[in-house]
Length: 381
Image (cartoon, rainbow, N blue to C red):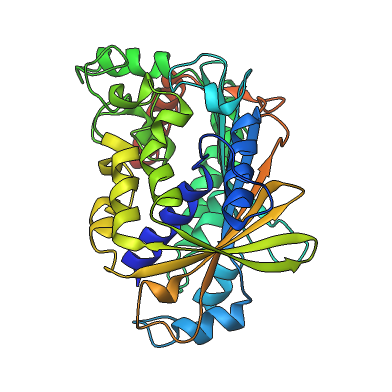
């Protein structure tokens, strides 16, 4: 089921960005979808949010026969929201991966439901070549539904951080869930001084800091390969060029049917070959396919050779929502399990969070050394 979920999630995400070239007759189903995607490319900012289009009860009914799946898992998944935001100083369709005027944001929230957007568990933003990070460590630990979350150890660690000298204000801010700012170049240069041999000047096509074993970002308890740029095979391409393979899937290979109007939006059924779409996704992502979590490339390779359907909602001529039933990808799911993608073209641009504390690589080393000193002192006492 996890493979199907990963593949279907990416299908929904990437399909949302597939801005088709040109325009069609707006009154036809094809024209409604094409022009909605085109309008998305004309925006200077967009926010996309992924979550399940169903209650925890519906999620549990669909997945209750999966290995070790409990009602608590359904509650956790039902409240999980993942959103990404992009903004630029020009239309997104004209943006290249290496343009300096682009900003990016990622947020993972838990406990969402109804009108509540939940509480931010992880926040990452990239603005003006600087990264900003926010982490709710206790909230993340609570996502573990096995009952063995290690909260007591985590509480002890947080209390220990609280005892650090005031000079470690950035470490305390990070531990308490506040925003800290990171200069990627400073961390890359610091990694070089530690003998990693990798940094932003490396020829590594990932654009990141190097391996997870030698990156000082590991001290944050965050993914160590935080990228500073797109891979070289993608960076020089525009938004439209990156999505060209997907445009083929949505125009030449798709069948679009008008489903009528609901809640002020035109709903359209887009049916297309899943295997062809998966291949086009890999072509669009280039080398990023192997960089994404969850062995995504294998998930895409395992997409069934069948026709799948998406529900696309167009509101006010703009792309508004995409829903895909994950049961199409996994026959062990009971009933339906729709995964939804909301799209807000023209959303507020990504901005640097106010009051973020500057976190330097030396801060991490100093905090570790301080803790070791305390441990040695207690041992000698």
